[in-house]
Length: 103
Length: 151
Image 1 (cartoon, rainbow over the protein chains, first blue to last red):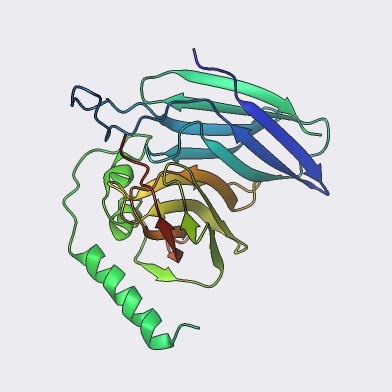
Image 2 (image 1 turned 90 degrees about the vertical axis):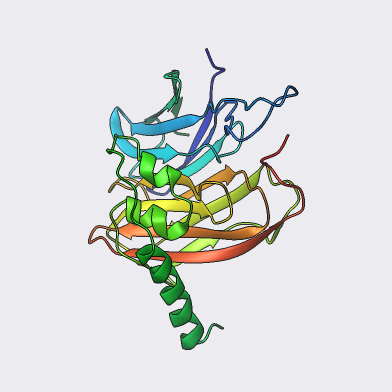
């Protein structure tokens, strides 16, 4: 199981800026190991963000997103105390959800 | 300042690339496999079912002029235009151009940042696909001193 994400959501006016730092290898499938074999791709494919349980954004990623990916987006109509939940799913079917409160 | 002629020429090149392809017959999953396998910017946009991309001043791509470490290049795409369906971030010279695709809803702004790997110096693109199927893009050159795709 992967390590938890770090999520920070900061409200300013009627918007909230959400910054997410995920912990994931993001192996591209292009690299070779010491024995010259290709390291199989292992990367986050789907990302979903929810505000108080309602989906506000979905994203699809390729293997060229950096290791331990960073993501920033802005949610309209979010205020302090609202819950932001972020879920990712990788190409091996692993998934993880973490939640943060807008401050 | 870019002249009109240059802008037109670039659009023509992109359109030309688009016309010279069309071999993808894989069925579509929820995950846009075709788009993530496409090698060029034009192929990617086509795989997502949008029209030929045109350059637009209303799209913004943010990134460094020179990236010391190609493994972690901060890139952002944003637009203030209404009616955006998807925002894409692409690196032209990566093995597959598409880095990330964001589905925009009414509840989020069309403004996303993430970090990408870049194998070599390349143009990076921000593409906005509108609800009417038009694709608009902005590009920027990022020089990479150390590639991010090797060991």
